[in-house]
Length: 172
Image: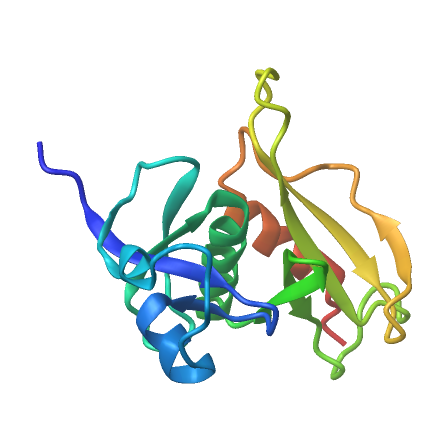
């Protein structure tokens, strides 16, 4: 069976997930310790710990490290469901799916302005299923609480997160 080949994805310091072609257009060719043409070749999706997602600029299929790709795919799914979700950089080259809650109607806790949802992978020796965890933040970016449910596992992740977000938003 022939394996799917896609473009190489690049998580940038500007909080963009770009294919190698869009990266070059947006940020110019960069001097790298590896041959740029090596990055441009199509890659098999299953290599290393990479999964498929899409380029933020052109929508082309790319492969990216599974944490960033899982969060990007979650953002895309939540946008389809009507949420204001963005893939953001949280410090260093870490990432999260950030959902900005509507100001109209408020939330159960008026201090909550947005939630950040991060994909957590256990150590390779653990037999634990990877999970999404969710934290709520005020408009200054200060944390308010951590969701102890650690969404994932037996739940359909997008549906469970969508349900939790709906619980946060009041219907005034």
